[in-house]
Image (cartoon, rainbow, N blue to C red; front, side):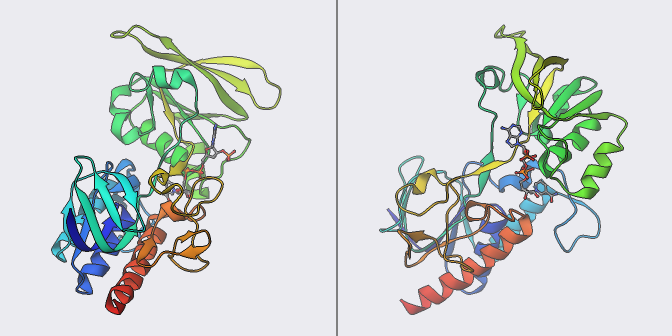
Length: 315
Ligand code: NAP
C-alpha cells in the first residue's frame, strides 16, 4: 500500500491540468497514466481549437507537452492501469496489485471509442477494422477505405485518411453531419472523399483466413427504405463517438443513463445517491456528456485541483 496526498487518475487534458494546478498549489501529486496515456488527443491529428497556438498542433505532441509540464511542476507520473477502486477508502488497485491510497482523488478517466456492435467488427478488428485513423491509416496507402459516423471525429478521420488512401467513403446514417461547419466544408469539397447518406453498416464483409484474410467490403442498409447495397473497401474506420470510462465506479458513483458520472450542478463534485463524497472530484469527458472538448476538460481539471486543494487544507 502506497499512501499519497492527491491522486489524479487519468492523463488526458483533464488529468494533466488537474495535476499541474495541484502541484503548483504545493500539493504532493501523483498522476496515474492509465492504459491510454495522454487520452483521446493522442489519437487525433491536427488540433486547431486549443487556445495558444496560432497554427494547428498535433494531438500527441500537445499531450506530451502537458505531461512534461506536469512533471516539470513536480508531479509524480506513474505508469499503471487501475483495476479496482474503493472510493469510500479512497484506494485504487493497479494492474500488479499495487494499492494506492490517498487523502483526495481526482477522477479523469475520460472516454473510449464506441463500436457498432457487429460480430464481424470483432472478427476483422486489426484486419481492416479500426477506430483510429492516425494509428492505422498508414496501412491503407492507395487503397479504398470507409469511415462511419457524422460527428467531428468522423470528419477528421476522413480528412486524415484522404491524405493516405486512394479514396474515402464517409457513411452516415442521417442526411446531415453533426460535426463543425468548417470540417463539413472541407470534407464535402475534398476530391478524394464521397459521402453515402442515410446508410448504416449492416455487415462488414471479408475473408476470414487467419493470415491472408481481412476486410473486403461493407454491406450497407438504407436507413430510409431498408435496401441493401455493397461497397468494396479494404479498411473501415469506426468514428461514432465515445463512451465514458466509468465501469470502475459502478455502484459507487451516480451515473446518467449512458454511463457518464453525474455531478452537483456547476461543480466537479460527483455524487453517490445524490450526496458528494468528501475529497473525490471529477474532471473531463468522464463526467461531461455535453461539451467533451480538450479545453473544457482542462478547465474542469483546474476546478477539481482548486477544490481538492481547499479540501486538503481543511483536513
Ligand atoms: P459525436 O459528436 O457523438 O458523433 C457521433 C456520430 O456517430 C454521430 O454523427 C452519430 O450519428 C454517429 N453514430 C453514433 N452511433 C452510431 C451507430 N451505431 N451507427 C452509425 N452511426 C452512429 O462523437 P465524436 O465525433 O466522436 O465527437 C465527440 C465529441 O468530441 C464532440 O463533442 C466533438 O465536438 C468533440 N470532438 C472535437 C474535435 C475538434 O474539435 N477538432 C474532434 C473530434 C471530436 P447521429 O448524428 O445520427 O447521432
